[in-house]
Each structure stands twice: as structure tokens, then as C-alpha cells.
Length: 242
Image (cartoon, one colour):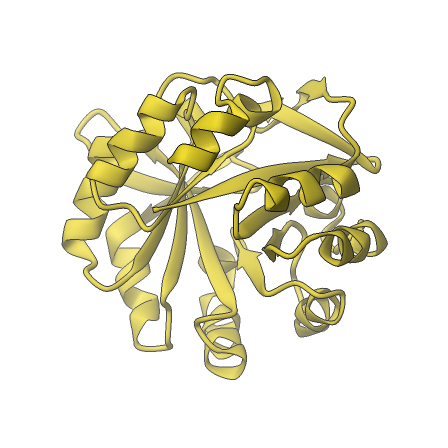
């Protein structure tokens, strides 16, 4: 299982949001470019970059910074945040991104996203689904920066994109993101069982190396972690020995 560090960008700085709330931001002193290089130096092969300014603006807003991050690292970089048009994908690929991450648009404009999967290829596009699990255990996809919960059920939504070449899915349990409360292992296990062949990236709640070990044991393809790395809850030594 791959460990994928998350670097969230806002106003050119590295930040983390609690439950995706822009008013509950923690800023870190780490320079995003230096951080990208440091993570690659630990042997991590993929970085997840979130353009929070772009997510709010509806268009990538930190492309120059992302290009410098790509140049500083040997790791493959996947980028999400504010991608609404084909030109946005091209702009990020030109900046050196290996993959782009599409979120709410997959629910709001599925035909367009299906076209992108077919045009750019499933190896270059990750569909990110942020979910809330209801009292009956059903995971429903949220949109609009987590402000709205749609009627779309997670597994059915993933399956609807398979015919268009979907290969990679990022799933975040909103109730755990940024809270260091442990990952939604049971949810991910259900998704993998229902969607064999999809490479699933788990996101949200990772607080320690033990959480990563549990996800690896569950068969996850990759796990994204941000805050636990930034705050030293997972050490460099643990990463290198994982």
C-alpha cells in the first residue's frame, strides 16, 4: 500500500482544514515546495496536492506553485481543486501533474467527466468522492465543499463510471477528515468488495502508523494522510520502515 502525503494549499501556504471548513484552518510553517521534496526524500512516490483557493474559485489558483512543487520532487503529483473545464486539466498536466482529481463535478456533470475519462485515460484521472454515512450505513456523496449531500450512493456512482475507463477512486469520510479519529476501514472494505479492480485511495482520519497498517491489512491500494505527517504523529522512521 502506498502512503500518499497530502499538501493542502491556501494563499500559497501549507494548511489543513478541520472537516473541510475554511474557517477552521491550521497553518503550518512548512514551505510547500520544500515539503514536496522532503516527502520524496523519504521514498514516498506520490503526492496529493489540494488547491483550496482553486476549489473556492472554481478554477486552479496555485498553478505556478504546483509547477514548482513538481520540479522539486521525484514523486508523482496528483492535483485537485477547482477543476471545471477541459482547459483546467490541460493547464495542470502542462504544470507537470501526473493525475488530476475530480470531485463534485462527477455528480453535477457526469457526462462531461465521463468524456474526460475517455479522452485523458483512467490512469490520469482520479474521481474523489466525499461521503457521509447515514444511520443505515449507506454512504452518500456530498458536493459543494461538503455543504450538500446528494442522493447519489457511493458504490452505484463508482460503477456508473466504469464503462468510461474509471480506474482510480479517492474516498473521504467527511466525519473523519482532519480529526485524527481513525480511518473508515469498514467503509473502504465494503467499497473494495463491491468494486473489484478499482484502485481505492483512503482519505480522512489517519492519526498513526497503526492506522496505516490497518488499511494495508484491509487491502487498500493507497492511503492519504496530511495532518498526522505535518504534526509528527507519524515519524520519518516509521514511513521508511513501512
